[in-house]
Length: 434
Ligand code: ATP
Ligand code: MG
Image 1 (spheres, rainbow, N blue to C red):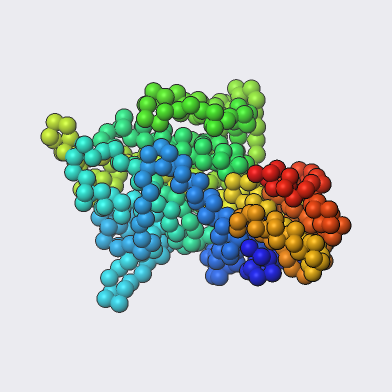
Image 2 (image 1 turned 30 degrees about the vertical axis):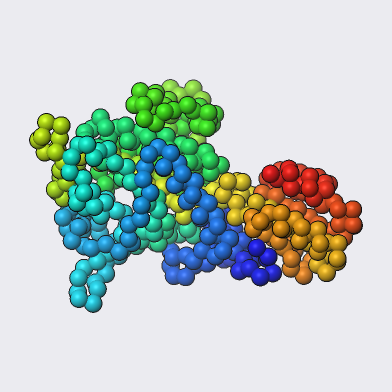
């Protein structure tokens, strides 16, 4: 993209309404704009980040055998009456009526809808297990929307649902999701710690929250330092082998990790390498047995011909919350520092003298080489303003082209995360970025 022709409205001043770094930086870097309380429009650069996160989340879901699909945002109230949640859910649910007076709602989650879809088509134990997921907008009329996209009212969630013949099968599905989550967060460039959680309104007894460490997090967390060193890219786990999954699961969950709600002082006292911090919840997984299948009448023919109620789990990731959480974990005084995996652009090309034939030609050559994956700052503006915006927007690499270097075909390459700068030919700079 050429910055002169893009809607990336950066701001020099801190917006008064933003209390935390990620909210300030998302507004200042021109990623989002609020359109109503807790409801955000994703401007072009922000939308790229959101899609990059969604893509990684989806790839890791598919890697453990979950199937991608898409369910609608608008749901019929009837299904929620069948599960008994229509009344139980309370004022967080946005209730609507169509022109015929039929009751609808904007989905806060999709257990009922998918239970209904599976009920229509899955009839036998041979059709199980099934794990399905979608990445779709949710609406929850939060009492206090705050911190930008971290606690919005409309937000993007990855929600997966598993259906197994029995408890043992459901545990295998649950562990697959644990594996997918640990890999996802590592690819996103953040450390997320799995913590045993209360099961909340969805119910059940096997549940973990995934918490990213950041000083502005909503909860206090206590954890074993062992989590600082875990590397899941090296994990050789065959996700179809239950024994392998069990070993992996025990390894990632056996260290102490708890939020303040679940904190156990006597157990904590025995942890040798204690770490404390604040954390942001970015994911939550639950096993909830037959809680929906039973009232909604989902049954399949079991191996011996008798009718069996499948065991279910659901697995959420806050995709839009992650944009804010990643910034909380990766920023400095000057702005955002995107992990390479989610950055809206691989690099920014800074033309320090627009109109200078040498600068223009070298910048155009660099821009063409990226095939759309770079942002070209071709604005007729001061160098200082361009440097400040590049740091603010957080592109992993900056290619700086000035008139003197351009004559010799040289650029300055800066790595945003470290501040390291190198004088290189354009070809060498491109090779280094890869
Ligand atoms: P919280 O305790 O933060 O309200 P929750 O327990 O209601 O979260 P879940 O129902 O488990 O959340 O939803 C799955 C994920 O969706 C959460 O882990 C979180 O990352 C994200 N999420 C939930 N509510 C919001 C929101 N209002 N804005 C943005 N993301 C959200
Ligand atoms: Mg909530």
